[in-house]
Length: 180
Image (cartoon, rainbow, N blue to C red):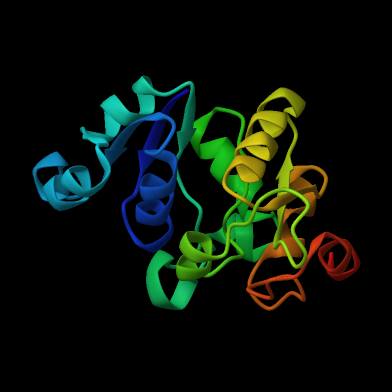
């Protein structure tokens, strides 16, 4: 599959490393493709502009982060008023959003993937309103060595945000469902 990844930080870089093993990956960041040479050499991913990454993938990974108004994002009034950040992001993009990979530590994403059926396999919640897009992400989560949990629609995405029982907890599927 062709995958565009916009963001090469902790999680985006980890996903680039993992997905480059079986997919055609186009990676971008806000500083430009010329700053991605080391990651590209390590992974075989193609460094591109943000707009090219957005257009290159059958799947585009834009943001696996969380809303941090004090540390990074500033206040976003709609989110402060109660709108789940994933719905806000979907409105900004004008495209379906599937929220995943935001509740695992980047190092754990790189190191703790396990074959299907392994004891203690970490579960990752996946939310989205587009069932086709969500099924693609659930398959990708499985391919990366994690149990995907269909955690509902974007209105439920707050359940996997910082401060919730499933956030950075490395739970198995049963524990993840209980925590959600």
